[in-house]
Length: 454
Image 1 (cartoon, rainbow, N blue to C red):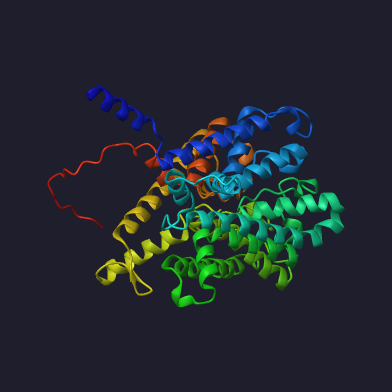
Image 2: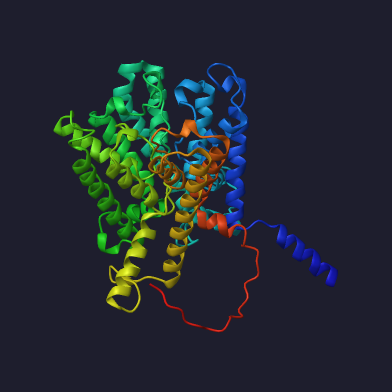
């Protein structure tokens, strides 16, 4: 009997928890992509990419970041570009969601374990209706990406011809919706992103719309599809996400305009300045595209971009960052502490204390990781403080924006950025929990003693 119990305990230890399963799944996706990108015919010049370069690109694509050590169009062949956009799609939607949908198509039973993984992957509030949510995610993604590609083709087909124009439209629609930031505009000038379209309203509005839709989160999608314009019945998460997204987009655009209208955007028309400011605000929230030269931004604009990259999108979305709900919870907690109110309240509801603890942990872990890696990189390469912080905040927030130092990183710095991108996509908190999930939680507490704080 005792031997049977020991066997069961060993089996239990070997079973991966939900966060561990997701972490391992992304690792497998990254390594598969790395091997494919190392194939000679993945590169335009038919020369195999070195392991670290391929690993960096595969991690950036799978973790929908957008940081690159080589220009996507210049370096990769059509096959390599297809591998990259496939990893972006899988990484953006999550392999769990795609797996559940394939099981639905094959009429296989979705077990409780798979439903739990789906809930963890999408940050769904309840496990009930999770299969229906998977269908909505896949169908909604097809509609939004397809619509975006159709609109982009109006501009790209006349410029590049039918087949190339269609491919460009599909590639950039997927990259924008998944908040990845990979582009194929290097045929004009490497690392130029969408600078050639800084005053093109069609391209800008389509890309911005896809970024925002992909970044608000699948739970918000589901809530909006059920309740339409009945705002009063929205979930608390939906209200917080929509309000915060609006404030960050338009507030950020207003500050960008004030900071750059007489500097980087001095020679633009008023229309170009407004559009560039909006695009800079939207893309900074983990999308990775740029319509103006990021490296030429003023210090104030770089600092604002770092803040937006660090916050990122919303839970259960294609975006990264600490998430909009995290920053709102912390602001509400501080406000509650100052006003000495009981509990953290918003929109007539009181937040669970666990949400405050988790928000504090996420902020602390992400900030510590970004600052620690920044110190190491500056110690190894002696790069400027602003450029180094910009790079690490971009990586941990899976934003993909850079001042131009990515391709100058030495191997150790590249590996650390890879680690930040990985943690940023699966969630730094989830990554930390993956090491402690199987630990036994003790109910015994140490004696209480007070300390001074603040």
